[in-house]
Image 1 (cartoon, rainbow, N blue to C red):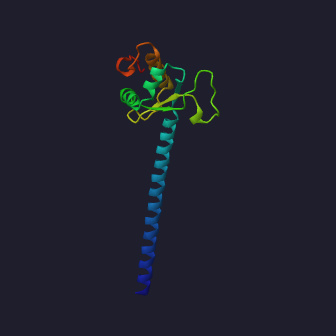
Image 2: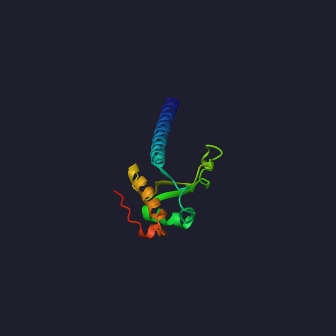
Image 3: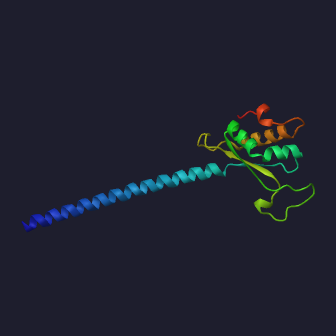
Length: 152
């Protein structure tokens, strides 16, 4: 009987070891999947286009810095629009190279609604440049209602 109990205890220990090994493998697979998802997200976030509009006319600068204008652009083009920097008069130089001291610029990155692949930078650049051309030309406000940009 003691031999049977010892054999049963050994089987229970082996079953416990197998369960722990399976749990460790499952956890490793989950971690690998999470790392792959983070890498894919990082690659997607690395795609961006920055367009400086510090020298644009005052009406265009005002329009582009309004959050409602940015939200319209985001909804229309399925991108994320962020305006950063400070206005500097013509000829004035920023005091440092920090991002917050840069002249006014718009950062355009792919939005969540776009396919989870690296979109061509030419699409984002085309949106940014076309948008600024539309806004800056006389009578070009509001741009996002009339702009006829094509995304290839």
